[in-house]
Picture 1: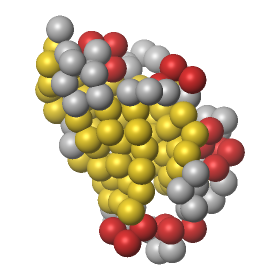
Picture 2 (picture 1 turned 180 degrees about the vertical axis):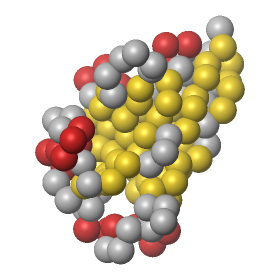
Picture 3 (picture 1 turned 60 degrees about the vertical axis):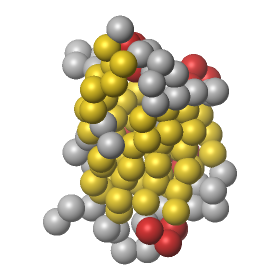
Length: 125
């Protein structure tokens, strides 16, 4: 059964914007912290942004400014708005859910409860 399902990735020109979505089918997902990670083949999975059940946000230092995470608990969905896309943003973007925000922010990959399958973002120069 699908627990987290990402969408919204695609091919976009540098300077453009994308909004990624992640729909959760986890029971009581509103009690979970959620977040976005990204990964390029051959590299480790990188923390992008996290959001608590109450809506407090946390961003990787290098992601502040162009990335915005938000959630709609009524729709069991989180979003990642990415503006001014750069070729180096090219990666697979993964949605994560965990009972503890610290697992997400501190990139405790093995301890995160749920992962989505990822959505590919490709930015052309």
